[in-house]
Amino acid sequence: MVFVKTHDINELTSDLIGSQVVLGGWVEDFRRLGKMSFITLRDVTGISQVIIRGELNSDSDGINRQSVVSIKGVVQETKARDFAFEIKAEKIEVLGKAVHPLPVDPIGRVKSNIDTRLNHRALDMRNQRTSSIFKLRHYVLQSLRNALAEKKFIEITTPKIIGSASEGGASLFSLEYFGKTAYLAQSPQLYKEQMTIGLERVFEISNFYRAENSHTGRHLSEFTSVDIEAAFMDYNDVMDVLESLVMDVCRFTSEDCKAEQEAIGHAIEIPKSPFKRVTYSQCVDELKSADEKLEFGDDLLDSHLRIIGKNHPGFFFLTDWPMKLKPFYIREKEEDPELSRSFDLQYGYLELSSGGTRLHNPDTLKARLKEQGLDPAQFQDHLKTFDWGMPPHSGWGMGLDRLMTTLIGIDNVREVVLYPRDPDRLKP
Ligand code: AMO
Image (cartoon, rainbow, N blue to C red; front, top):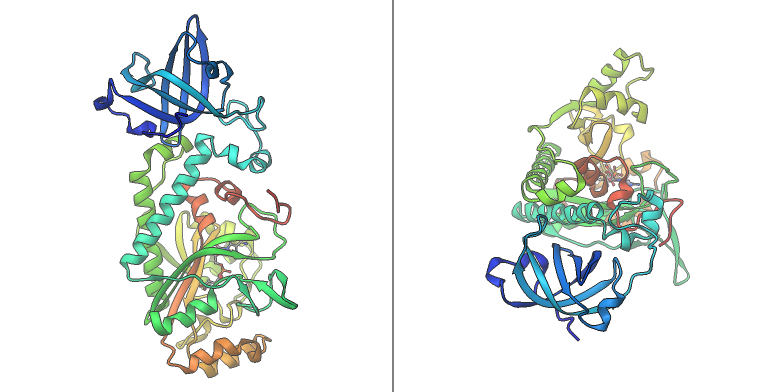
């Protein structure tokens, strides 16, 4: 029994030369050369070379690639180019044998398509590119949480099983809930607005659910949303918060995640700040001059956004959408009530976030619900909080999975989600 790990591979230093250590990891390569054998051992932190002289113990016979092993040995200097040190093995124990051949080659020498990799995701995670994507995702979350806490936002967790639609009726998954119908939350919209009453500035990072039958590289049935809501802020203020977070994430990952960028083969760019703010009306003019047939008030189709995205590459805000295209909770511009205090954050054609200033007057909110064909009685639990001293507030929701794809320069959200859910994928 040697499997109590004393060190991760990246903890081996010259101070340890001559000392006994116990490492644990996976056999990336195993070669016999006469009476010597060499193991390339990988753990989550790096790779090391292990040297076995002669037949060490019966277990070393059974070693094959990708099995998990525990190795007790002494750290020594090495002549091998790719390693800082090597371990002279004293005892090896195979803790879990890997079958041969494996359904996915973790080294990536044999390429697998994305469906095969997703069907064997845990094994795919031993691939350096894949694991680096998820390490980056971890650092992005860490950076977002730190930046929001610094801006005095309080993290909340809202329910995901809800009794009525959070944003109106569309795209809801329903489920049976002790004899009643419940739904999976599409967003924390109503709860996050309500929380501004007591906490002023809140954020949530959670999974939400959309029953959209979309088959694209940017839509999932279950996605991770980063949401904020802030009392006493206007939509311009929350755009500033969003821009500052995106800048922080890009700077932090670009500077501190060099190994991950190298493994992915993509250098994270630090965008130019401030991000451009382009109004919806300006986009309509740009589309008309590109001979697109559309009028003020029409929604922007994917084909339109591709043109706008070419005109404005990288991050930019698309602001001041017509009121009629926006959900019931968005507030109008007093100086031009056909327009809303709203925005999307775009990365070229891709929508990363949308948000705006909210209505906080309960009478106007009730009237707007009716205008949009929604029944205020269905929103009673929400509306009653507006009589308890609701502050003016604004917020946004950002798709974390989409943000990840822009950072690492790929166009399929499935690459950055552990076990993606889409209309064709419910397992594993
Ligand atoms: P919206 O519906 O625009 O706004 O969603 C916000 C952001 O969430 C991401 N997103 C998705 N990502 C992957 N797959 C999906 N099916 C999917 N749907 C949405 C997008 C999108 O920009 N309550 C408002 C936000 C607010 O005003 O605070 C909302 O949910 O990146």
